[in-house]
Image 1 (tube, rainbow over the protein chains, first blue to last red):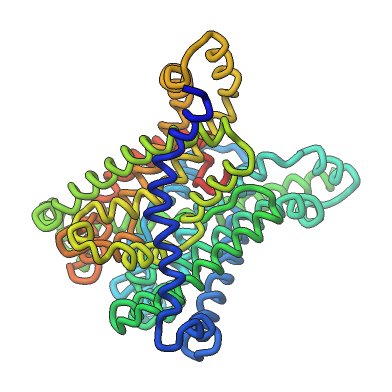
Image 2: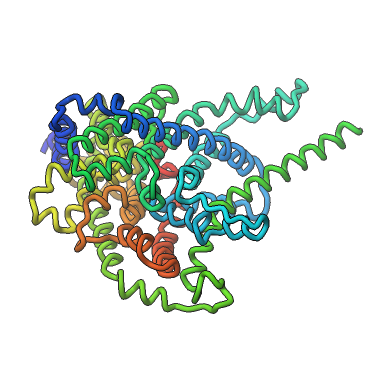
Length: 271
Length: 273
């Protein structure tokens, strides 16, 4: 058997599975999106119909806020953990990356325990101010949940990027009289920019598509994945659900593709 | 002298501030998980740990949801088998062949990481929902899991090929007259073992926790562990939901620890190459 034939045989099973269970279904999804009463206009409705547009804007705003907050938090913690060696550091890193494999539903439950009706924050605010704070079932709760699953991922990327920084650049800046803030602003943060773009894009795309967390917390939260779910199951508006998921998929994919052309490495979201 | 003293104090202050901040972030992540583990073995969460420690809730979870746990393992191990059988040879072909075709294929199989699970699940439902025997069986969920976990297996194996310069080994074996199949079995696979192991850990961990696709694909008779979790969060008392979450943690933590040991090969969260 010639090598090329063998390689083709190696690739064949994967090609069959991916074609049958991914490429063809996705093509079907795009086609079904245009089978509603309005045809192809269903795709335009994502932007023109006030309810869909409002949800889209909500989802984008929430994802952007999550991304910005996660990047800020993960940069402070990641820089610290990569730059200092102290007893207990390994444990701390393990704790910060522990939630990496939590499904969205479990993250939602964590937020309920933290800020729900029987939650810790409620108990503390009740004891301190006599006022029970319950955030879990609102946009704030969803924001906390998205932070919860974004922080571990972004911290790992930032730590890896900090490890690759050239320390002599910072030494040079310090030797020239730059204080710690100036070194941070002019040397470290600019050098970390590709990592910010890559991990920020992942955080954004993951937040856009996150369903499990919203599903656990949602009573009346308007985000795109929940809208798709209710259109499909409650309203049985299958064409609109398909059009909305194609739209959602396109936004998530475009953000990642954009980040990759900028940062030049393989960027992908998970979960 | 005073400036150096000031610098020392300033650096200590910065260190203390960053440490406090990092500890707070860790607390945000860990405190709810700890609360949940505690609640799962507490007689009454409302009265706290003083109400006593019990395994009753865990027992109750076992009675109610043992089938979901078994099914999740069945699906995760099947997903592992499928991704190994179709993923490892494909990774070899893609790496050795290289070029534009290989890049395009890699690009396509990585798409499920960018496209939200909900969209993929809808696509599968629209295409195969009509085949009712398939739709009703756990194989339908397996399909979604395979599409979602496949890129992790392929990329982690390709990464190890690149790191061990497997092309040279392959060419060496070829020059000694070994057939492609023997080379694959005796040279390629043994050398790819760390990547295969890392990829396997990712596949099993992700499959055990998969919810976004599974929620759409499951039927009342094919509930998996995460589906059961969502169910218990909505309808069970907090202690039972916590005990169920505790069972999930116990399953997933050894996998996570093993994965961290191989983080170098799997590329951390799978986000990087």
